[in-house]
Length: 277
Ligand SMILES: NC(=O)c1ccc[n+]([C@@H]2O[C@H](COP(=O)([O-])OP(=O)(O)OC[C@H]3O[C@@H](n4cnc5c(N)ncnc54)[C@H](OP(=O)(O)O)[C@@H]3O)[C@@H](O)[C@H]2O)c1
Image (cartoon, rainbow, N blue to C red; front, side, top):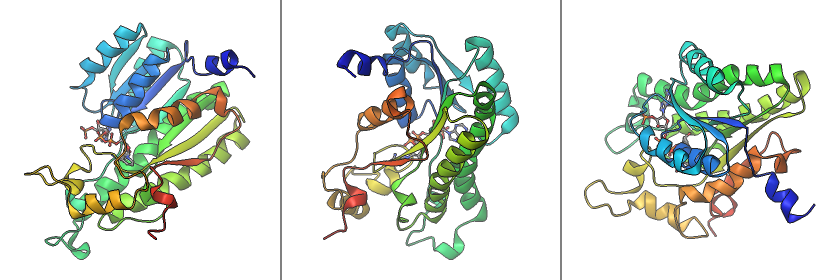
């Protein structure tokens, strides 16, 4: 294989990729990188307010992109999204499940013990991360199964390998996402087509809306003790930048990863490799 043949694998021209949580920080960055690699991109989110900026970027890349409303916890809403997407592009080649997150009410603190975490907050976080990955995989995975081709990329987390303190629902749900990634990879390959691949990335720590309250002080912007501890336990000594995800995401979505399925890839500056000593 030469450089030209390898580079061609990263040209997504004619391929349609749906990104759930597509107007969020990581989903938006991933969607824009795909636009830069010539993909047709669908930014699917329940909140489309930030979509204009993403669509303008897509336009500047000369690719077709649309923003589509959809709730990853509601199969009927996803079916409506799929109808819009299939009308526009005819098929879906890849799905990135980037909707997810945590919330303060499901996080233990000095004022909120594990025993008092409200059931609705636990259920919200658990459902969003695990069912919010399973439901879109059903809706768009069925379409891939019918075509015998496709790629699904999930977003797991460091919590999946070993739980982090304070966030029990998020940790358990992300462990579920890694487990489901392996399950679906086997199921798709055995029951439908070995050309349908399912993988996950497990990002380390990236400052975004879902964790800013845990890692930085709201008033001063300084790192919290938890934020400092994370940096100390990250051999590369920094938080991730959303762009740090892109090489691995494009690779796993591309034919360069044709023999990779069921993998969960840490992108964490060495966090998961470090014993602390
Ligand atoms: N940031 C990190 O350090 C980190 C580390 C590991 C893994 N992750 C994972 O990476 C993924 C992206 O996170 P992010 O940091 O980019 O967070 P983010 O900016 O909050 O993006 C998440 C997006 O998902 C949307 N969303 C929430 N519930 C939804 C629903 N029911 N249906 C459709 N869309 C919904 C959110 O909309 P709203 O704004 O309306 O809520 C938001 O646009 C998540 O799975 C997260 O768990 C993040």
